[in-house]
Image (cartoon, rainbow over all chains, first blue to last red; front, side, top):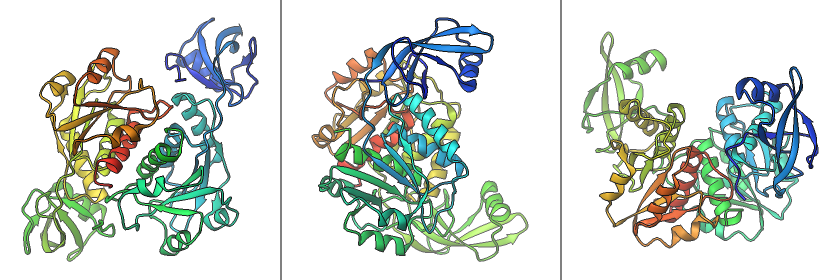
Length: 245
Length: 245
């Protein structure tokens, strides 16, 4: 079922059920009362990643206080998307953007990966998490992707689950067409690894390509920025092996 | 052949051939001399969309003057990509971003289209053109996509060339999978139409779907922002019908 975009969506930690009364936190209060200027009885949609999406109505029990009361469930909980999105940190602005796109495109796990040529760094996991929640609120997903702590590329692959195919976008790939490679994948589960703006090192590329659970996929004849490659590759993976089928 | 990213790439209007001496314009002078602090003999790559890409060396014949002298051709001219990218204007920041992405993804023609729910507007075609050139310089393409004047959606389809398949991303499409629709396309030429943030109107959707040269493609179960849908859809089109094959 598609998201309802006429109503403001908010992520909450609380359990959601009929009559559940959920106090808006400071940010939510400011947004609902001061930015959107909502009043008593105004409707919002709430989700917590566990209990589906609920229509709730605002009550103002006291000054500077909003309680959101769940009325009925508007969408049932959906399972977390299976796609793992592994990315080398970018400079902050582009990384914020890329993370939002990853949520829109249906990543279930977001995993920062440190590579040899990585230029950006994770200055704040909280900022990344807030970005993920905001993207989930905006794009209508009910599940909020899990954000994993940064790992070194080598540590990531050392403990790899062979039942999950690791796809990496290889600018050095000879052919241009990613579809044949993606359609040949037998594993039902995929992880997509996007390198830093500087690309992978020769050493990383050769070593990745030698791993049995790795498939290198090309992304056409032009060099794409990391955030462009992320959306393009996720579209191809979702269409061939993911939830766009 | 892939782009060389160690050297600065510049678009010029002038003809390019061995010994061609091309004066840097004011912006180019400022960028080369003041931002990059380049000196006599420094190398850049020049392209004009007609004569391929050329290695050139800087000379400083006078104060406040740089002449770029073409040495040898580094890449032969490639034909303009065939993909037409039709987009409803977005708010300026997102539109700048989307236009850059369209160039990276290999659009040959960029065509603003006015639809019923369009929110953004083209404040400056020159700004859009400058964006296109900058994106071409950065992403290594040799051809600079053509920017067409904005047209009303109805006028666009009234004069449509039936040899080109018009693809539009339809949030109302029942299925999630765009590949089957794209792989079934017989025409060798494609145009991709991305609606405004508000989506197409019901009237527009029904009327587009009734046109014989139109194919509606879905983009998965989540609602995508227009700039996300643009990159995702171009990736699928390039992989199935474009130059990623």
